[in-house]
Image (cartoon, rainbow, N blue to C red; front, side, top):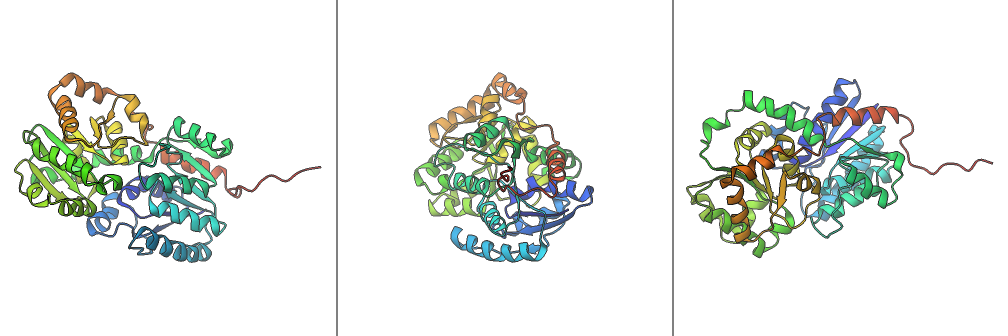
Length: 378
């Protein structure tokens, strides 16, 4: 079959890499389309080589506001769909890219397979991710749900049950595979010397960055936890927030903080995460990675679309207030029993064979991907 893998963010590249490799191993014609939503070199160019997947066949170079990104993707991806005539377009997750790729494909009468379907909070947050994932699902023909909860939420929205498949999350495939590579190949620990207690930090969620009150709580906790050694993986949007709210010089100068642009190589990020006593983040993907790799995780949000990790005990939502962040971080770092309990939590996101399951399903549906209603027989 001819399969388009359409994505455009660092996180989605990591989660789609196992699918691209599986498609290649099975001999399908795999076409990679990159939206350009992430275009910084640290988030894009070196990442493909590190993940050992081909560079994109098409780069739409969609930049700007959400609406500008969407307009460019809708117009350009329709052309690609008409030219390539794929059997299915695989999109991933809850990004602007996924939403607009899904719309363009569906409106071009190309079936969409949504990887990571059905993530719901039934809240405005995470914003705009809840808008994106619901729209992607509305455009989809096949729904690859990570968990039973995701399936139940899709069923509550009247998605046909025979189109929903609980397959786990492909980030587990990526994390398990690349964590072993990271231990063998990464040299990041030669550059950044780990001192205990050690925390890997990443914060980039839009609803946090848009709120000065939230970011002040998050940044102040980072600065005041001076007994903790932090590696801060800084996306451009996070750097912009640090500058906007006048924290950038202090964060860069703090002796207990490595304030570094997001590392180009996934294996380097994983190597540091594997060394961490705790991950402090608002990232959805990192909540899943931590559960898979048994790393204690505290989430800088009030609600999560990954509640399975919280229910399992691997993760906890702690909000954005300075006092609570400091209290919860110190509890994990200073109480071995608490930390060990989080590490022992069962991973709810699968066994690392998600990409295989997805391709088994795609092959089963060959030639009958579309979701038209059944004919009335008399």
